[in-house]
Amino acid sequence: MGSGEFYTTDGSGNISLLKSHTGWRQSWKQIVPGTFGGNTYTDLLFYDAMAGDGEFYTTDGTGNISLLKKHAGWWRKTWKQIIPGNFGGSDYTDLLFYDPTTGEGEFYATDGNGNISPLKKLAGWRKSWKLIVPGNFGGSDYTDLLFYDPTTGEGEFYATDGSGNISPLKKLTGWRKTWELIIPGNFGGSDYTDLLFYDPTTGEGEFYTTDGNGNISLLKKHTGWRKTWKEIVPGTFGGNTYTDLLFYDATVGEGEFYTTDGNGNISLLKKYTGWRQSWQSILPGTFGGNIYTDLLFYESVIAPEAPTTGKTELNESNVTLQRRLA
Image (cartoon, rainbow, N blue to C red):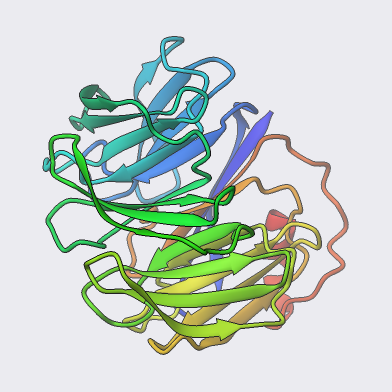
Protein backbone atom coordinates (compact mmCIF):
# COMPACT_ATOMS: atom_id res chain seq x y z
CA MET A 1 0.00 0.00 0.00
CA GLY A 2 1.04 3.57 -0.57
CA SER A 3 1.18 6.44 1.86
CA GLY A 4 0.95 10.22 1.91
CA GLU A 5 2.06 12.70 4.54
CA PHE A 6 1.13 16.37 4.75
CA TYR A 7 3.57 18.85 6.33
CA THR A 8 3.58 22.55 7.06
CA THR A 9 6.68 24.77 6.90
CA ASP A 10 7.47 27.86 8.97
CA GLY A 11 9.81 30.07 6.94
CA SER A 12 12.95 28.90 8.74
CA GLY A 13 13.33 25.48 7.16
CA ASN A 14 11.38 23.65 9.87
CA ILE A 15 8.56 21.30 8.91
CA SER A 16 5.78 19.87 11.06
CA LEU A 17 3.53 16.91 10.36
CA LEU A 18 -0.13 17.72 9.69
CA LYS A 19 -1.35 14.20 9.02
CA SER A 20 -0.11 10.83 7.82
CA HIS A 21 -2.22 8.64 5.54
CA THR A 22 -1.80 4.96 4.72
CA GLY A 23 -3.73 2.68 2.39
CA TRP A 24 -3.29 4.91 -0.66
CA ARG A 25 -2.95 3.30 -4.07
CA GLN A 26 0.50 2.11 -5.05
CA SER A 27 -0.19 2.89 -8.68
CA TRP A 28 -0.63 6.65 -8.65
CA LYS A 29 1.65 7.85 -11.44
CA GLN A 30 1.15 11.58 -10.96
CA ILE A 31 -0.42 13.90 -8.38
CA VAL A 32 -1.36 17.34 -9.67
CA PRO A 33 -2.06 20.29 -7.34
CA GLY A 34 -4.62 22.93 -8.27
CA THR A 35 -7.94 24.58 -7.52
CA PHE A 36 -10.50 21.91 -8.34
CA GLY A 37 -12.97 22.42 -5.51
CA GLY A 38 -13.00 26.13 -4.86
CA ASN A 39 -11.97 26.36 -1.21
CA THR A 40 -8.88 28.18 0.06
CA TYR A 41 -6.74 25.04 0.26
CA THR A 42 -4.94 23.24 -2.53
CA ASP A 43 -6.88 20.44 -4.18
CA LEU A 44 -5.33 17.39 -5.80
CA LEU A 45 -5.79 15.27 -8.90
CA PHE A 46 -4.47 11.71 -8.64
CA TYR A 47 -3.80 9.85 -11.92
CA ASP A 48 -3.44 6.06 -12.16
CA ALA A 49 -2.01 5.08 -15.55
CA MET A 50 -2.36 1.34 -14.91
CA ALA A 51 -6.11 1.58 -14.39
CA GLY A 52 -6.88 4.63 -16.49
CA ASP A 53 -8.37 6.36 -13.45
CA GLY A 54 -8.37 9.95 -12.28
CA GLU A 55 -9.61 11.10 -8.86
CA PHE A 56 -10.12 14.68 -7.69
CA TYR A 57 -9.78 15.46 -3.97
CA THR A 58 -10.17 18.54 -1.80
CA THR A 59 -8.08 19.25 1.32
CA ASP A 60 -9.22 21.02 4.49
CA GLY A 61 -6.15 22.64 6.06
CA THR A 62 -5.61 19.95 8.68
CA GLY A 63 -4.24 17.18 6.46
CA ASN A 64 -7.54 15.52 5.59
CA ILE A 65 -8.60 14.89 2.01
CA SER A 66 -12.11 14.26 0.65
CA LEU A 67 -13.09 12.76 -2.69
CA LEU A 68 -14.71 15.18 -5.13
CA LYS A 69 -15.10 12.82 -8.05
CA LYS A 70 -13.69 9.60 -9.41
CA HIS A 71 -13.22 9.01 -13.12
CA ALA A 72 -12.78 5.25 -13.51
CA GLY A 73 -11.37 3.32 -16.42
CA TRP A 74 -11.88 5.75 -19.28
CA TRP A 75 -8.82 7.97 -19.07
CA ARG A 76 -5.91 7.12 -21.34
CA LYS A 77 -3.24 4.92 -19.81
CA THR A 78 -0.57 6.65 -21.89
CA TRP A 79 -0.64 10.18 -20.50
CA LYS A 80 2.94 11.00 -19.59
CA GLN A 81 2.41 14.49 -18.17
CA ILE A 82 -0.54 16.42 -16.77
CA ILE A 83 0.16 20.14 -16.57
CA PRO A 84 -1.98 22.50 -14.45
CA GLY A 85 -2.61 26.09 -15.52
CA ASN A 86 -5.07 28.73 -16.66
CA PHE A 87 -5.99 27.54 -20.13
CA GLY A 88 -9.71 28.35 -20.09
CA GLY A 89 -10.12 31.50 -18.00
CA SER A 90 -12.36 30.18 -15.21
CA ASP A 91 -11.66 30.36 -11.50
CA TYR A 92 -10.60 26.70 -11.50
CA THR A 93 -7.38 25.08 -12.60
CA ASP A 94 -7.35 23.75 -16.15
CA LEU A 95 -5.27 20.83 -17.36
CA LEU A 96 -3.08 19.88 -20.29
CA PHE A 97 -2.65 16.14 -20.89
CA TYR A 98 0.28 15.00 -23.05
CA ASP A 99 0.56 11.57 -24.69
CA PRO A 100 3.99 10.84 -26.23
CA THR A 101 2.84 7.54 -27.71
CA THR A 102 0.55 9.36 -30.13
CA GLY A 103 2.05 12.85 -30.15
CA GLU A 104 -1.14 14.44 -28.85
CA GLY A 105 -2.07 17.07 -26.31
CA GLU A 106 -5.53 17.70 -24.89
CA PHE A 107 -6.64 20.78 -22.95
CA TYR A 108 -9.44 20.43 -20.40
CA ALA A 109 -11.32 22.83 -18.16
CA THR A 110 -12.50 21.88 -14.67
CA ASP A 111 -15.64 23.11 -12.89
CA GLY A 112 -15.04 22.89 -9.13
CA ASN A 113 -17.01 19.68 -8.76
CA GLY A 114 -14.50 17.23 -10.17
CA ASN A 115 -15.84 17.33 -13.70
CA ILE A 116 -13.63 18.04 -16.70
CA SER A 117 -14.67 19.19 -20.17
CA PRO A 118 -12.53 19.28 -23.32
CA LEU A 119 -11.25 22.60 -24.59
CA LYS A 120 -9.28 21.28 -27.54
CA LYS A 121 -7.37 18.26 -28.82
CA LEU A 122 -4.13 18.88 -30.68
CA ALA A 123 -2.34 16.27 -32.78
CA GLY A 124 1.01 16.15 -34.51
CA TRP A 125 3.04 17.07 -31.46
CA ARG A 126 6.54 15.71 -30.97
CA LYS A 127 6.70 12.35 -29.23
CA SER A 128 9.99 13.30 -27.60
CA TRP A 129 8.98 16.13 -25.27
CA LYS A 130 10.45 15.22 -21.89
CA LEU A 131 9.35 18.24 -19.85
CA ILE A 132 6.46 20.69 -20.23
CA VAL A 133 6.82 23.65 -17.87
CA PRO A 134 3.98 26.13 -17.17
CA GLY A 135 4.64 29.80 -16.50
CA ASN A 136 4.23 33.39 -17.59
CA PHE A 137 6.46 33.59 -20.64
CA GLY A 138 4.33 35.80 -22.87
CA GLY A 139 2.53 38.22 -20.58
CA SER A 140 -1.10 37.28 -21.32
CA ASP A 141 -3.71 36.29 -18.76
CA TYR A 142 -3.31 32.63 -19.70
CA THR A 143 -0.61 30.15 -18.76
CA ASP A 144 2.24 29.82 -21.24
CA LEU A 145 4.30 26.68 -21.77
CA LEU A 146 7.91 25.67 -22.26
CA PHE A 147 8.48 22.35 -24.06
CA TYR A 148 11.89 20.68 -23.73
CA ASP A 149 13.19 17.93 -26.04
CA PRO A 150 16.44 16.30 -24.83
CA THR A 151 16.79 14.19 -27.97
CA THR A 152 17.47 17.31 -30.04
CA GLY A 153 18.53 19.76 -27.34
CA GLU A 154 15.68 22.14 -28.12
CA GLY A 155 13.24 24.25 -26.15
CA GLU A 156 10.07 25.87 -27.48
CA PHE A 157 8.00 28.56 -25.77
CA TYR A 158 4.27 28.76 -26.52
CA ALA A 159 1.45 31.07 -25.53
CA THR A 160 -2.10 29.84 -24.94
CA ASP A 161 -5.32 31.77 -25.65
CA GLY A 162 -7.99 30.41 -23.28
CA SER A 163 -9.61 28.21 -25.92
CA GLY A 164 -7.09 25.42 -26.13
CA ASN A 165 -5.03 26.96 -28.91
CA ILE A 166 -1.28 27.46 -28.62
CA SER A 167 0.94 29.77 -30.65
CA PRO A 168 4.75 29.73 -30.81
CA LEU A 169 6.69 32.43 -29.02
CA LYS A 170 10.17 31.17 -29.84
CA LYS A 171 12.18 28.05 -30.64
CA LEU A 172 15.63 27.73 -29.06
CA THR A 173 18.24 25.23 -30.21
CA GLY A 174 21.61 24.11 -28.89
CA TRP A 175 20.38 23.36 -25.39
CA ARG A 176 21.96 20.63 -23.30
CA LYS A 177 20.50 17.20 -23.81
CA THR A 178 21.07 16.32 -20.16
CA TRP A 179 18.73 18.67 -18.30
CA GLU A 180 16.75 16.46 -15.92
CA LEU A 181 14.64 19.11 -14.17
CA ILE A 182 13.43 22.58 -15.15
CA ILE A 183 11.91 24.46 -12.20
CA PRO A 184 9.75 27.59 -12.70
CA GLY A 185 9.81 30.40 -10.14
CA ASN A 186 10.65 33.99 -9.33
CA PHE A 187 14.44 33.98 -9.32
CA GLY A 188 15.07 37.33 -10.98
CA GLY A 189 12.28 39.63 -9.90
CA SER A 190 10.67 40.47 -13.26
CA ASP A 191 7.02 40.00 -14.16
CA TYR A 192 7.89 36.86 -16.11
CA THR A 193 8.60 33.35 -14.89
CA ASP A 194 12.27 32.51 -14.35
CA LEU A 195 13.75 29.04 -14.66
CA LEU A 196 16.22 26.79 -12.87
CA PHE A 197 17.80 24.06 -15.03
CA TYR A 198 19.40 21.08 -13.25
CA ASP A 199 21.85 18.64 -14.87
CA PRO A 200 22.64 15.58 -12.72
CA THR A 201 25.26 14.28 -15.14
CA THR A 202 27.54 17.24 -14.36
CA GLY A 203 26.16 18.39 -11.00
CA GLU A 204 25.27 21.82 -12.34
CA GLY A 205 22.36 24.22 -11.95
CA GLU A 206 21.70 27.30 -14.05
CA PHE A 207 19.26 30.12 -13.29
CA TYR A 208 17.70 32.00 -16.21
CA THR A 209 15.32 34.92 -16.60
CA THR A 210 12.76 35.20 -19.40
CA ASP A 211 11.54 38.37 -21.14
CA GLY A 212 8.03 37.70 -22.43
CA ASN A 213 9.16 37.05 -26.00
CA GLY A 214 10.66 33.60 -25.59
CA ASN A 215 14.19 34.76 -24.87
CA ILE A 216 16.14 33.59 -21.84
CA SER A 217 19.18 35.16 -20.17
CA LEU A 218 21.60 33.50 -17.77
CA LEU A 219 21.47 34.78 -14.19
CA LYS A 220 24.02 32.45 -12.69
CA LYS A 221 25.63 29.06 -13.23
CA HIS A 222 26.40 26.79 -10.29
CA THR A 223 28.82 23.87 -10.37
CA GLY A 224 29.59 21.24 -7.77
CA TRP A 225 25.98 20.42 -6.99
CA ARG A 226 25.03 16.88 -6.02
CA LYS A 227 24.37 14.56 -8.93
CA THR A 228 21.72 12.73 -6.92
CA TRP A 229 18.97 15.29 -6.39
CA LYS A 230 15.76 13.50 -7.30
CA GLU A 231 13.37 16.43 -6.79
CA ILE A 232 13.66 20.19 -6.58
CA VAL A 233 10.46 21.72 -5.20
CA PRO A 234 9.70 25.46 -5.49
CA GLY A 235 7.83 27.35 -2.78
CA THR A 236 7.90 29.98 -0.07
CA PHE A 237 10.09 28.46 2.61
CA GLY A 238 12.06 31.50 3.70
CA GLY A 239 9.68 34.40 3.52
CA ASN A 240 11.39 36.74 1.04
CA THR A 241 9.91 37.80 -2.31
CA TYR A 242 11.87 35.23 -4.32
CA THR A 243 11.08 31.56 -4.82
CA ASP A 244 12.76 29.21 -2.36
CA LEU A 245 13.70 25.61 -3.06
CA LEU A 246 13.60 22.20 -1.40
CA PHE A 247 16.15 19.70 -2.74
CA TYR A 248 15.51 16.00 -2.04
CA ASP A 249 18.14 13.26 -2.40
CA ALA A 250 16.56 9.81 -2.29
CA THR A 251 19.89 7.97 -2.41
CA VAL A 252 20.85 9.13 1.08
CA GLY A 253 17.49 10.29 2.46
CA GLU A 254 18.29 13.98 2.79
CA GLY A 255 16.41 17.22 2.22
CA GLU A 256 17.83 20.73 2.05
CA PHE A 257 15.90 24.01 2.06
CA TYR A 258 17.42 27.01 0.26
CA THR A 259 16.47 30.63 -0.28
CA THR A 260 17.26 32.57 -3.46
CA ASP A 261 18.11 36.28 -3.76
CA GLY A 262 17.04 37.42 -7.24
CA ASN A 263 20.58 37.25 -8.64
CA GLY A 264 20.93 33.51 -9.01
CA ASN A 265 22.51 32.93 -5.60
CA ILE A 266 21.15 30.37 -3.14
CA SER A 267 21.63 30.16 0.64
CA LEU A 268 21.05 27.15 2.87
CA LEU A 269 18.14 27.47 5.29
CA LYS A 270 18.30 24.02 6.82
CA LYS A 271 19.55 20.53 6.07
CA TYR A 272 17.77 17.33 7.13
CA THR A 273 19.13 13.79 7.23
CA GLY A 274 17.35 10.53 8.00
CA TRP A 275 14.46 11.11 5.60
CA ARG A 276 12.87 8.17 3.82
CA GLN A 277 14.64 7.15 0.64
CA SER A 278 11.40 6.01 -0.94
CA TRP A 279 9.46 9.24 -1.47
CA GLN A 280 8.33 9.20 -5.09
CA SER A 281 7.06 12.75 -5.27
CA ILE A 282 6.88 15.90 -3.16
CA LEU A 283 4.08 18.34 -3.97
CA PRO A 284 3.90 21.99 -2.88
CA GLY A 285 0.59 23.58 -1.93
CA THR A 286 -1.54 25.23 0.74
CA PHE A 287 -2.49 22.36 3.01
CA GLY A 288 -2.18 24.09 6.37
CA GLY A 289 -3.24 27.66 5.77
CA ASN A 290 -0.22 29.72 6.84
CA ILE A 291 1.73 32.01 4.50
CA TYR A 292 4.44 29.42 3.81
CA THR A 293 4.30 26.58 1.33
CA ASP A 294 3.14 23.23 2.69
CA LEU A 295 4.20 19.87 1.30
CA LEU A 296 2.69 16.50 0.45
CA PHE A 297 5.13 13.56 0.44
CA TYR A 298 3.95 10.45 -1.45
CA GLU A 299 5.40 6.95 -1.74
CA SER A 300 3.89 3.97 -3.48
CA VAL A 301 5.18 1.33 -1.06
CA ILE A 302 5.45 1.81 2.68
CA ALA A 303 8.96 0.83 3.66
CA PRO A 304 9.67 -0.84 7.02
CA GLU A 305 10.62 1.72 9.64
CA ALA A 306 14.38 2.04 9.82
CA PRO A 307 16.49 3.23 12.75
CA THR A 308 16.92 7.00 12.76
CA THR A 309 20.68 7.43 12.70
CA GLY A 310 20.88 10.79 10.98
CA LYS A 311 21.02 14.18 12.67
CA THR A 312 19.57 17.43 11.47
CA GLU A 313 21.42 20.69 11.63
CA LEU A 314 18.77 21.77 14.14
CA ASN A 315 18.61 20.00 17.48
CA GLU A 316 17.37 16.80 19.06
CA SER A 317 13.79 18.10 19.24
CA ASN A 318 13.48 17.16 15.56
CA VAL A 319 14.02 13.44 16.16
CA THR A 320 10.26 12.83 16.21
CA LEU A 321 9.87 14.57 12.86
CA GLN A 322 12.73 12.58 11.36
CA ARG A 323 11.16 9.32 12.46
CA ARG A 324 7.98 10.31 10.69
CA LEU A 325 9.88 11.12 7.54
CA ALA A 326 12.37 8.29 7.86
